Length: 328
Image (cartoon, rainbow, N blue to C red; front, side):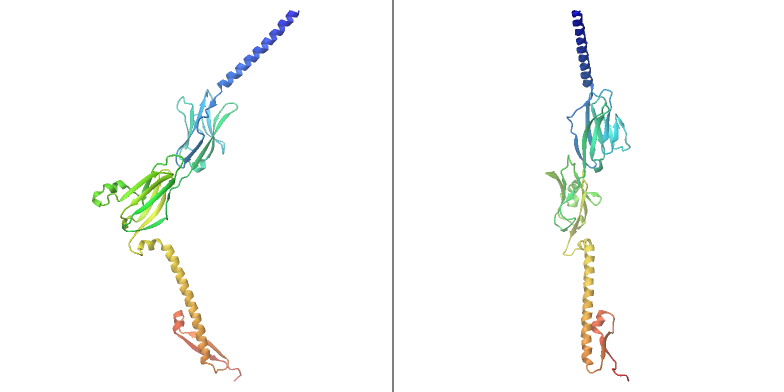
């Protein structure tokens, strides 16, 4: 009886241990089959407005699961598997056949597209990895005032600067009005005598800098010049090539200011004339008082033969009205 009990207890222990081994093995195998993210990818991306952005999500051992891209601010599903679930055609998933890369492509991004995006695997529970997209707007600026004045025969130098962005900023084009400024065409034009007169120099330091230089400026160089970078907003400056001390171009450009000064001068002239008219009125009144010194209860009234201030100055006469203090 004792031996049977021992054998029975041994069987129970063996079954229990075997069950534990089976359960442990099953759990490890299940975890081993689960998909997982490759964290060795950039997850903070900065692009400029208009520059296509790419968010790379690498999923290993995906199996029969699907990968989705979610925009966190509104929980909008952008893509699921290879399909796009948004009407915004700027968003698209790129995944080569058999690849572990699920790349979200954003064409022509705008600042409003900045935010958090999630790469999500439809396991139970769901697995997700967050990405941050920053869309910035670069602006070019031309050093100096928006209007420049250069004497004929001098050299014009316009400097356009774009602060360094998160990537290669490409190049810069210069336009005069709607016409592209092409230095090579000027350098090869032997017959015009302007060989090498116009040059463009572009270089990288802490920023992208482009210099447009025009030697021996002529009045035909007057116009609006625009610096147009490939990855930033443009900037403009108006160049006036002048001759003489008071050029018509300068007067024309300063028209709003000139009109303001003329209005101010006119107002001051009117006030001055009114002041002179008041002084003449007082002097005339005093003059009339002296001439009629012996009259009784005299009311003097100066009158003007003309309505204008000039008439007041030259045509005043004295009119005396006499009132008797006793009834006649």
